[in-house]
Length: 414
Length: 79
Image (cartoon, rainbow over all chains, first blue to last red; front, side, top):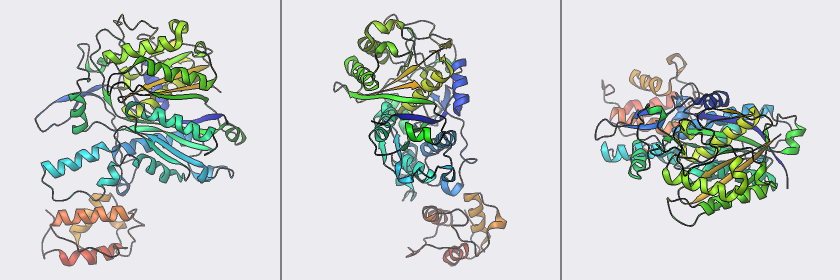
């Protein structure tokens, strides 16, 4: 099996566009969550959201935007950053040995171009339109993200889209990792994107009764993972992308290797549509450790799924204890969702990038707003303030989803 | 060229009016086949007309104008 290098990272999030701004916000515990007016037809109503001030015009021509939902726009901006960092932004910069047919894409998204679907139904049912925009299908299709990235960069290798709700992009990275490991591709652009801040999606989530309510200390402090005063998750938009490469060819072309992707596993609870189950989650953690050939004690930081729902936080804490056993007590864990919100299909990639930036900087992002820990969540959750962690060698990122899909990624310092 | 159509083109694609020469290919203006179809729908909605189905879509700005202008009632401007 081939080793896999990570050579590029890109992120667009509510706490910053670009990995530098993103990580700076994480360390400073600067929240991107706010109340957003969703213009529901029933009247003024705001929801808490990790919304991005994003103007697509500087990034894309108007004619191109006609066929790009917001989810693809966010994906491409993150993809461009990752490809530029890898030194592969333009095919002219690619080494002669890098064939487009060996360069693939694997993307994760929960609901793809849901905003375009929402607009289509608005036109049809509210505005009584007789017909829809010709681009409706290609705007909304879930694999549009993969298609746009492949077209943008000329990637002709394997292409796939994974929709495993909130684990989607963690699975996408893991499956891309396997494509390279097992020799089906040499380079993969992998990650995910989500743009759920449209009326239909927001109302659907509201009906699940899992969304946070504004906290007395300010809307920006409303996502409180592992906290006694948590009230639920916060919907967020965003995209996060990684360039993965076969280790030897990355070395041979003199690429700057940011970290090594060493372990991935997925599992399924087969238990309940929305209730997580600790044994299924623990199984994914244990299998990822085995995949990496590591003992639990080797993990120096874990970016938790940590959505700030009561059941989610408690079950994940149990799963970590089941998988890490005695090592759990000494494991620094944090949830960065307190700051960027829950980016759904993009969350896995965004949080794996948070873990990689922590690994490279030797600094652990905190769990923001964790002033009153839930006694049932009794691990070291790095409350409130970032922590120096010199000599950090291995990091893990958990992603768990509605539907019972679990995905875990592990990376090692290069 | 019809000024209402030119105006809609500028408004939709953010392209400067002085670039809109009749012989300019739509491709050179950054429009792929999907954007052309989308724009034709916009023209239909804006002017309340129906452009007959084309076996091959217009290639240049002039061809697009030739297709659309005869369908516009005289003196009718965009709504």
